[in-house]
Image (cartoon, rainbow, N blue to C red; front, side, top):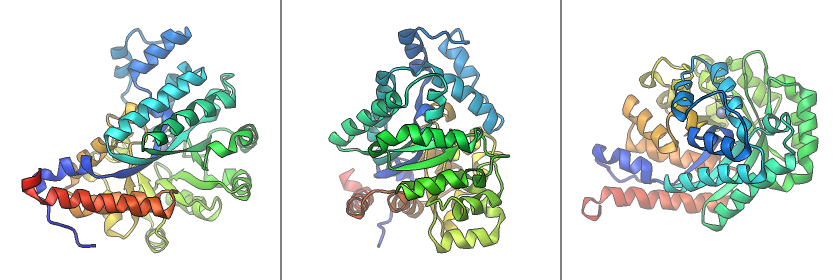
Length: 349
Ligand code: HPA
Ligand code: ZN
């Protein structure tokens, strides 16, 4: 496809305006401090922080685990179906303003069922927000994630509890503390999920080694790798990811905040694209990492000097990497082309 030339000063606005899919966003990670305090009040939950400012101050992370400890504590205010609805509704409304046309949203049911919240409460609240977003023109789906620091037996129990609601989610994923919890620990539960017809994704190669990415592909049969940035340390793996167009859902601000890279200028997103991988840009946990999807695009482009051509590639990749029907992907791609043509015509802006 021939891309129109676009002036570099228009790149930040183009990144915001272009249609895109978000494929790596944990709904619990969209919980803003303001909503944590509002829900704590509504539900009578005591918080160990005196103010929103004090809570925000605690958001200084050194690695994945230091983030997860605070992230799970924040989610403790979510109790009722209405809370899950409000959370997802707020994310989807924000995503629509950022020109996200399709979102595949992760949720962590074990974080909630462990506190006595029924599976039904979690799924019905999130699913209703997705249905409302669809009615307003944003495509939205759910992906259930198993917490890898817990056992495979607990993942099986979670799957069992979720099966009465299987029509409400399209896939399963694997998240939480990566190092020490390799994908192969969950081989049997993912095999069962494949039999049941779910899409399969897994976090791998965020902090963990390339071997975890191989396992996610070969043992879990993951269709996408979440993060995957450590793949650059294994040339054979890079060749395979490129040859098979296995998507990587990359999250630049997350990687910066969790010190996966010393700074954003060192991020390897451009290198992944240059190697022919189907990389995408996503926000991971926008309330904790300082920005939603457009901020991720704008900041990583500014820090690494990527171009409009790479912007087009990343948005096109996000549609290709999605589990949406081909007809929807084609429609979004046409809208992407329209946006680029609009930005190439100075008189019209
Ligand atoms: N990695 C692993 N687990 C997570 C993340 C992440 O980036 N965000 C929320 N849960
Ligand atoms: Zn994640």
